[in-house]
Image 1 (cartoon, helix red, strand yellow):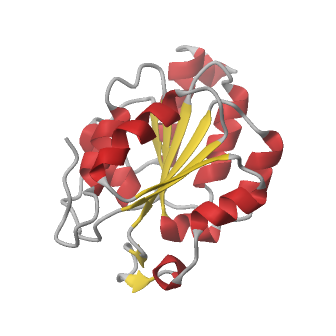
Image 2 (cartoon, helix red, strand yellow):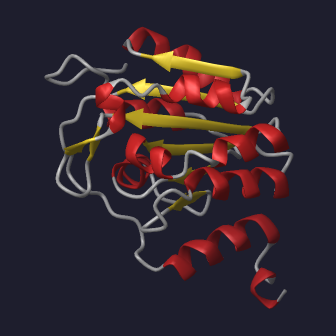
Image 3 (cartoon, one colour):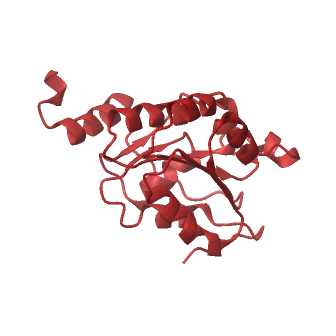
Length: 201
């Protein structure tokens, strides 16, 4: 079940939990900040690649992973501020058109990691329309908990690329932090995908 916060918008940690339930072999890239804490709260492991930095890079990292692993579903879970910083990546995603890539933006209309300054989505910027303008044909705007099941199903279909925005409650959540070393995060996913000798390649 997906709840709502005080604002009446979707609880972001419930959203992450539902999206990652029964994930099978799906790989997940999480943008820095809240998305990284949320996927870790659901359960840390080598199929997760949470970003500690590189703001604006989540979609491109997900694209590279999807192209390199075409038999696996890849989910990018990121925030509105991070997506706005890397908005040009959507044109490349549309051009490359990997069927196994889904990008879900947790949109709380704020820069949550730098003081809760309002983002452009608070003032009318429509990320779904921007994705459509870039050429991504499968899109979705989620504003109600009842829509999350359909969102989850869409992320599982190899009919991508898929792009969605979920309007989430801006309340902070307890931090659940993944390993801090980027080299460790990279190495464990590499080993997960390529085997224990991957570090020798």
